[in-house]
Image 1: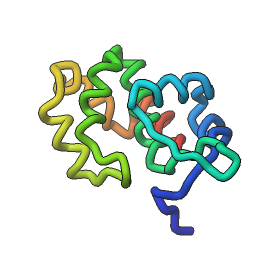
Image 2 (image 1 turned 90 degrees about the vertical axis):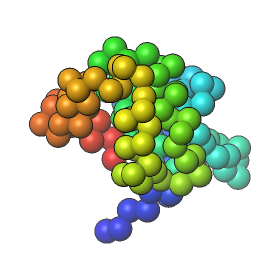
Image 3 (image 1 turned 60 degrees about the horizontal axis):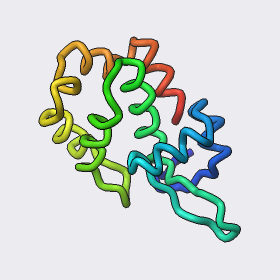
Image 4 (image 1 turned 135 degrees about the horizontal axis):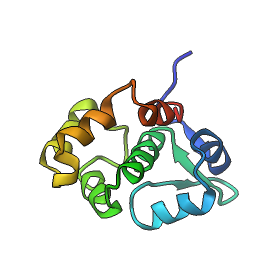
Length: 123
C-alpha cells in the first residue's frame, strides 16, 4: 500500500497515532510548529507529513530541547509539502547547539533508541 505524505488526517487520527492530546496539537499549531487545513465541516485536517514533525517535537521534549529551537529548525522547512531528507539536513546542521550536539543527534536518529522507535510508530 502506497502512503502519500500529503494525505489528510483528522485530529482524532493524529491523536491516536501520536498519543499527543488535541490541546497540545492546537498549542503546537499556534506556535507555528505544525499546520492544518480546514475541512468541509471546519474540522482540522493535518497532512500526514506533520506526523514526522510531531514525532520530532516529542523527542525534542524528551531530550530537553526547547520548543524555540524546534521552531527555528521547523521554520526553514517547507510547510506545503513533505520535507525531503535534504530539507531536514540543512537546518539540523545549522541549528542551535542543542540540535548540533552529537549525542542528541545520535539519540534522535538512532533507530535502536526507544525514543526513536516510539516516534517512528507515529507514522
